[in-house]
Length: 487
Figure 1 (cartoon, rainbow, N blue to C red):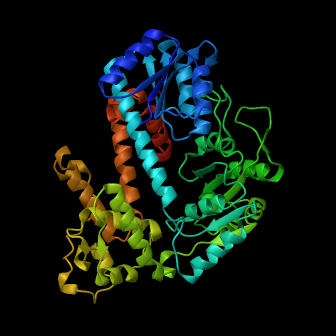
Figure 2: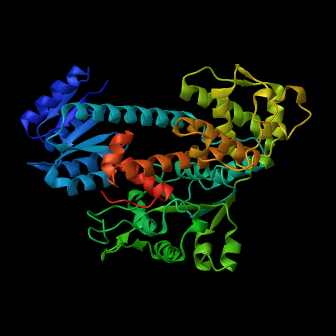
Figure 3: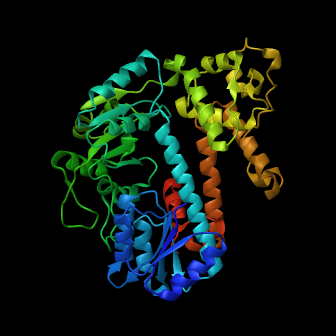
């Protein structure tokens, strides 16, 4: 196993970290300067975790962070900084650091932070390995074969592509396949869901900002266009982009230049843009909600991804693949679908498309009582699509809740699983799509809002008590559309 690298010009810091981590059975390699780290990297050495001071003679830890993230994006990095240098810590987060240690630090907390960073690094490495080993896309239906042929024809092109399809159909998978089979495959693939980011943050997310550009902009920040330089930028749910940002995007696509928020120097963009939407953009144009000139810029090549109900013959193939991947993720034996259960899946319309099927297979991997999944093990709404399949074996649906009940109405905090079960049942019986995503977002939002209220809005304290990193809670606040709270 690769060692943990500790970089600090202070010998005493290196010494105490080495001893503390060694007591936990961790191997540590120390460096007194960034120059020594660069020399080790040039020889092919690589750590499993980097812990680096920010201010050192002969080189900045922030510069080293940027170089490490460029070469090894998945490598977790912890930065060390004095309390008087917290602006630099903010810059470190924006540069991709896992977390920071403010000097002087408690050794036990430092060890706990290292263990969390190592766990995340292992999880991300496993996820990346699984993604690399898994097929990009699966499908035998004629519509999917035609889509595969189109991806092949576009493999030597860098033309802008617009992907249309219903939510959950797998539009990002198509975008990743277009990138992987393009001349830009060696460059980064950066995805952003324009509908998931608050309007006032989206411009900075896309184009970055200069220090002091607005309240809270404590350091320069690279936007997604800069992060995707030399590669592909995937703009998901482009139909929800605000009109003023559509103008800025059109300018980038037209002349290849953009400005950071608060910036005065143009930046040349060498990025291929792939956009996706579940909406009819022509209708959005007629309504005045989407610029016609931007629509024509994006609609150079259009690929339609069919919903799952239009390619039912692919459901058995996808279900087996999802059951296998869920079993690998959970470390259990893969479940197998009986012919009757498979017929029930094929008969179902899957309003949430491939994502709904994937979530269902993950649920079956956890909840099905035996290795062979029978119709009686499926949720009631699936059996309703094929009532002739073993009706006697199908369980009776639980009484429908009139409305989702909040935890307090069920019987106190101890009954929150029951409250969640009531809400899940309500959504499932109503045929709502993406129930997993809806309830997960509610759960995360409730946790974060409660923790922020408990800490009077201090994100660092809230993140620490929840057991997550500062960058994680900041990202979640943005993704969930919560009101940002200042520390």
